[in-house]
Length: 226
View 1 (cartoon, rainbow, N blue to C red):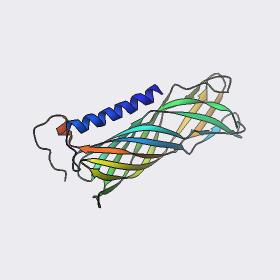
View 2: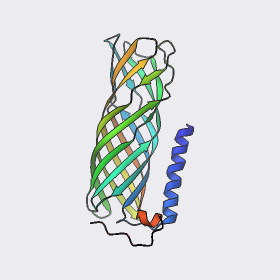
View 3: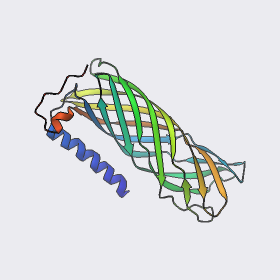
View 4: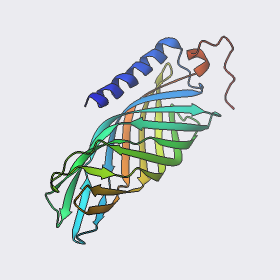
């Protein structure tokens, strides 16, 4: 929880510092968002020692931060990042078994197309990749051993909308779907599992758009995006 709190404070601090350092600009080249995000894995598992065993990963709310850079007025790249703690539970022949909890660091990088605004509504779509680092696995009901998961990569699709609320600020809603797998193991038990994660990631939050040169104190006028 301390790590989650640090992410929230960092995100809020960055947004406030940006707001103080520069005037909002809806044609600016940088957009920062602070969000609350629902991570809902569409998970299943194939366990090596029992074909009747399955597993699912918990659905969780986590704080998230995005940083978007606009190359043109329509084309941008977004980095989405956060930390979260998830839990794995047994299903099928393992129903009711606590398979362990674990932390994730799951950044997503997408290339986006932002449509021209319509009455303050600015929808966008994107595609990219997610990398997940799993760490600090907790103890399970499988002999008290800790769960361990291999880092994984997956393909991500994205859609969302920013709604202008004035002075460079937006309200935001965003949805991402990612397809990825990982391998789980429990030391000294001989138990291994091929885990399908495939999370649906739904975010709502607030964003602030500005010119990066303003934040860095440049005296030169920012070039207009084309």
